[in-house]
Length: 467
Image (cartoon, rainbow, N blue to C red):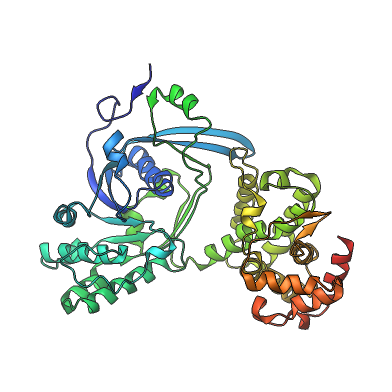
């Protein structure tokens, strides 16, 4: 018999102390950060509950309204070369609070002496200053504004006690997200003319951690939901599917690792002094691998990442790109770490439970190529004194891709009007040499004139003619 999922029907551990305030209750944080906290509770006695804060006005607190914060995370994918599935009932989420309905109750959460951490995932646009937030006495619209009011109340309530500062670990996908959030909070302090004592408490008693998060979370498994509900025995309308791979790199002082001991639970959470090498490796290997793969795979008649990786020729092409041309250009991490991450990436690309369309990755491919792939090409030339054969083929295929048709069929290009107009005009010549020269010399695309790279233009012309 399938039961309603709530704290009456489920067998649960004793109530835990709320150690974490989390801005946002979307699929990603629930299948990533809350899953990690739940594992820590079980394996290393973290003994912490999470209180969710609704960061925007127009979303209902469905988690607490319907299931008392309970839901399942369904892990599906490939792990160490074999199909892998795991189901976990998440019990660490305490409740969701709507500050738009009751600002005073929201502020009262800051009075919790057990509180240690702030987590957030409010989209890349969430960490922004909003001049329309004019004071600390009413609920601000922006997430940093809301957080500033909360921290100010905590500072006031605990009379500026140094040990009541918090550890703030944003998960928004922007570079140096902790530093960015701290900067906006200090802007609000000046904007609202709050005290210097409060500003000093923010700077000296709170810890803002830059972090990098990585896990694919497809969300609610609608195609298999009924089957999964039968297997768990619960009607769960909030279950979330995620891939096995997870990575959380946190740039923080040593004491943070002791308070958040995810590494002791066997989780892929790394506390580091400088996360730049990990960010660079992710952008070059994972994102760069995606971007280099798309035009080659598409022109070979493939339409998903998994199909491309499992195709013998295209899969071998991608392995050459990653292991033989990208990894040799990276020296900020050990070869063992780079190879392990690359093997994890290849497994993730093969996940049969995630349908990743090549065309969804192809969005704004020119700007993506500049950031994700071009640095590997230029570094490879610097290190090896020769052109990377497979990465340059990707650039030739990308130029051909932007012709907008292949074998008589249109390609639904999705890029800025300026990029599309450029290639339409260039391909009107129908001359490979002209198109390559105009593309490589376009500094708006690359920031430099790539015709000055010895041998690159001739190589691309030959590759383009061979496609």
